[in-house]
Amino acid sequence: MSALGYLLVRRLKNRLRALVRSPGQLIGTLLLAAVLILVFVAGNLPGDEPAETLRDARELYALALALFLAMFVLGANNGLSRGVSLFSMADVNMLFSSPLSSRRVLVYGLIQQLGTSLLAGLFLLFQYAWLHDVYGVGGLFMAVLLVAYAMVIFCAQLTAMAGYIFCAGHPRRRTALRAILFGLTAACALYVAVRAYLGENVLTAAVAAANGWPVALFPVAGWMQTLLAGAGGGDWLLCGGMLLLTAGYCLLLARLIAISREDYYEDVLQAAETAYSAVTAAREGKATEVLPSQVKVGKTGLGGGEGASALYYKHRLETRRARRFVLDTMGLVMLATSFGFAVFTRESLLAVFMFATYMQFFSTAMGRWTREMLLPYVYLMPESPFRKLLWCLRETADRIVLDALLLTVALTPLMGLSLVEAVAFFVARVSFGGFFTAVMLLTERLFGGLHVKWLVFLLMVLLLVFLLIPGIALTVVANVYAPGFLTEDLRMLLIPALCNVPIALAAVFASRNILDNVEMNIR
Image (cartoon, rainbow, N blue to C red; front, top):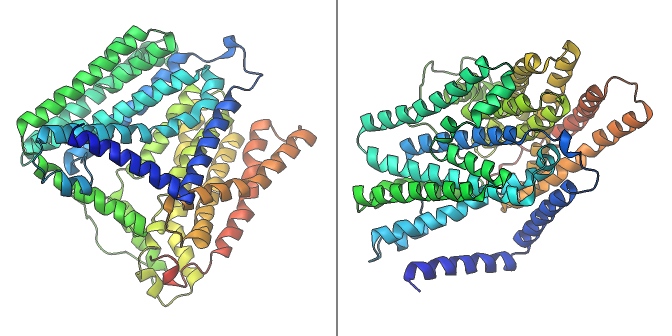
């Protein structure tokens, strides 16, 4: 066995041993496995919908295309500026100084990154239940979906690394590559939009265009969508062809990296150091934020605020400098994803709301109050802890309301919502945003001292589920004993939303002294 092969095997063994010897990690892994098994078992329970009621599988392929395009384009574009490292700092210290061929080291990094990409796509497996109910997919299709997503992530990072090395010290080359990347994406979107506009049925025409051969030509994202279509239709020869095409693309980029610069270590060193610093800061509970290479400062000064209220104006200033439009990039992606889901399932307001709420959970976790609590300055302000906490949360509250308003305005004409339904959707969206924020705050108050961050996340999810029980139970009671009270969709939206309000307020009040002692959060 070669030195690099031995290193890969040894690292895998050490990770397995660390998992077995760490009770917390082992319990967490077993719980995740149990939840995944439960999802697959629940999805295959008797009483499935008849085959003729299942939605067109091409809609699923179109949704997958949108996901693949977003991940590939955003990943490649970000890497062109900051670079993407396939190596950890341990690799930098050990392999970069070893007498091994730089090409072999590159292959080692690629194999590592492929495994990481597979792990990154595990969240897709948890979508099996509703995908099976709506589109009738099976376990084999979910495995193909996982592989396709992993290949998209992997190819995006490899493309970014090759582009970064090629453009190092040449801003015009970077601009040209970005123009090509976004030009192809715009051409793909324009093709689908024109076909949808010219078709008799907009949705049907858009789905047909998204599954057409011009879109399948888009690098990696289109190929992986074709792979899914082949798996759904049982055309395994087509699947094999798409995998070979993607493998050839990866080999070509790896070859270009090795040929363009034999000693590419300097180009990836900075990215490796940046990634290591981010991971270390996250483990130590320190605040981290990815900043753009060029910040548009614009107007300077807070523009208001005195005492604790200065925190709110500080957050507003930081948000304005970080956002692309009215929201930051991640917020816009979340809204676009929810809107895209609504395009294909607009008959069910409840299904759209559940998916949008699922996406909202992740966007709420990125509020600025979470980073503020990891800085020492907020604890030194001569104000009451509760007052400082409320001002820290105000920017997040503004963002939740704006997010709900934008999504409601976008969905109302699409789904033909009445005024009552639109207001109910807006109220429920704001309610769940505040509920998620309060639960995250309470989790930080109760378990913030734990150093194992994934364990804190698991405890937060369990606390979230526990606090959702009253709203769910009251909704079930209303459905059974008061079926004439409003419509089913309005009951499912408003009853949990109204239950969330007192629970969220109680959680915030229980966390009122979280900013009283700096040692509770600074570790």
